[in-house]
Image (cartoon, rainbow, N blue to C red):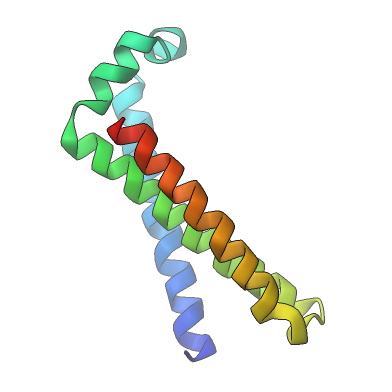
Length: 107
């Protein structure tokens, strides 16, 4: 994939993360933090399919955005030869984080 395409993907995921974080905060803003982190409220919010989907997408876009940022930082730091190996490890870790996030939302 061309660097310009990867850069546009990074920008796009950053914008999507910003939009989804804004929605997340707007949904949770009524009632304050202490009310919104109580177990019953969290379970009730996660039963909403649209909100749960938005949370999973937020996690996915955040992982893609941060992975592309890490890739760029590795290339810029002169570790170009090891980028594929390091990114392979990062992809495995991020896949596990995504799976855990999905299980948390649906479980």
